[in-house]
Image 1 (cartoon, rainbow, N blue to C red):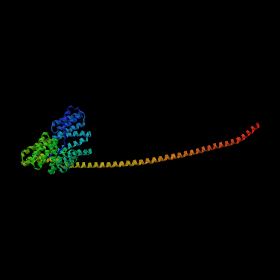
Image 2 (image 1 turned 30 degrees about the horizontal axis):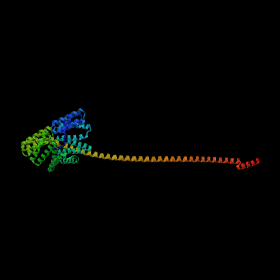
Image 3 (image 1 turned 180 degrees about the horizontal axis):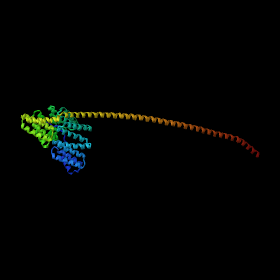
Image 4 (image 1 turned 90 degrees about the horizontal axis):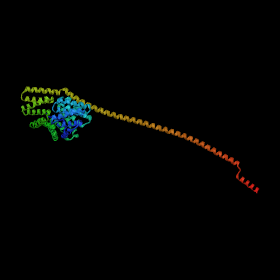
Length: 468
């Protein structure tokens, strides 16, 4: 069995974080430091990682830092998920999600929904897994975040892989890889390459599968990502097993087993043990096969993983059939059938189909509503422009009418004033004429009364002569 991978954050500043923590004040920065230290030790020292996550949770509650509280619950969920304690993982994840919803932190909601989907997949509850994956995709599309959309496609592809619909698996994994290749560095793509390899392997295209597996493993080794290296070894071993190259398969499984035990990754260890058991059945090493398969079943029972139980019971049934222990073979075959039926019953298949159709319908309806809103907005804008034009035209007409009235009134006033002025002018002229006539009349009277000067001069001359 191979593993579909999910990304893990790696923080390269471990020493500086530890130094900062020693003198840090009890504030949000200290919570963030504790969270970063958690990711540093998540796959190397579970106890230390849990210590940092618990300290971050206590401090977040103390200073009422809701975002830190949600992130701390999320980290504790990661730890439980890593070791296959799915019930505890769901409890922490749900506590974290409720806070993220309350504070409306959508980026964290979409990421956490994918984590919850992964847990339900491990438990074989695919309708619930698909529900959370589709919700994650919906929020990611609302945020228009390509990275989250790619991760949601990966999550949906993983659900279809669990349902053994490998064409759909490849479709969604390729969608995720296509987006990721455009937005991130190649050094961050080991997850997507590995998952596409899984899909090709299931479809029987082993050449393509190995090509993608090796690219994924190379990237993981370059970044020294232990979890990704573990998954790479497991997937390549599974591919060689499928090709009946058992020695090569056991070589890679042995490497994977050592890393899984070191990381205390029970979920992956169970897969590796079951795979080693399966190879030994093919090699007819029945005692060794039984040893590994029973260990795998013990872990599967501890983790309550339906998909793990299904695979392990199937392998044990094959083993006991080979060794002619038909009673044990029958028991494990019945267990396998019961678990398979609980995973693949028609009600769940219908539920999954209904959820996908519902999501597609809601998405199309949202697009139609958005298009209609856009048309309504354009129509409203056009109507507003028309109303504005009409009011502008009315304003212009009113302005013209007012101007005409003002001009008309001005002209009428001017004409009236002109008439008054002309009338006054006539009066003035008439007065002037009367004055002039009076002057002339007075002059005529004066001229009539007064003796002419020559007459006076003659008489004066005559008188002078007489007196002399």
